[in-house]
Length: 259
Image (cartoon, rainbow, N blue to C red; front, side, top):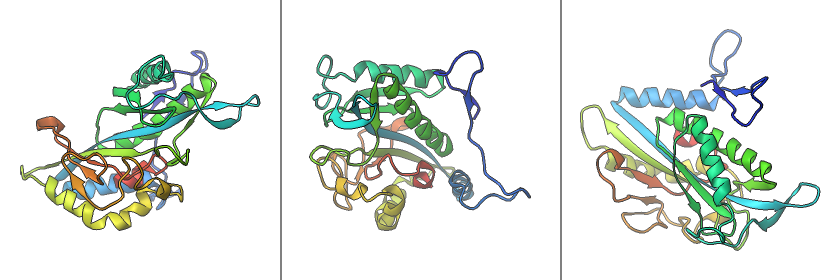
């Protein structure tokens, strides 16, 4: 996973990499959540099932005070799908997308979200470990580019009390080796176990202030049309057939969430 950080100087370059954490004798460290996900993938493959994930992370852009500290003043007052000049984050999102491309992460879309100063960038689906690595990298890139532009990026679930919260919608597809359509079983499993899973998908107290407001889900439900349901089934076929879990937020650990 070695990757050069393109925003650092060319001379004396800096890289990032992900790895497994072990004890000196080589045993995996039990709290290494990336290894937990790798083990879950292996268990799924033994059952003849593979997954792809495509997370969508929302974030706010806030202004800084004279000391460089975040103040909860949004960068703009634009709304859903607005464009420049109302959408002041357009060039920042473009800079983020170009940076992601240099790092081998393929952005697919970006737009202004519903809240003032709220943005979303979606990148192409991948196997679970790569998707989780990309989500961690994405947060770092967004924080870095925001700071370079004199702003602060905020991924917290409910940064403004009277505005939409930040979600991390997880698009997932599942494939069975024997060709069976196992998507309904997976969706049913999520609906059956979402109460326990929520502790890992929504890890902060603030996470629960987001639920049931705007398009954030408030009930254990699914729909093919309604975007406020827990699980949405987008109108897509073939390679892009998937379901979307809308309850996670960007403060979760993506390795545990995908596990």
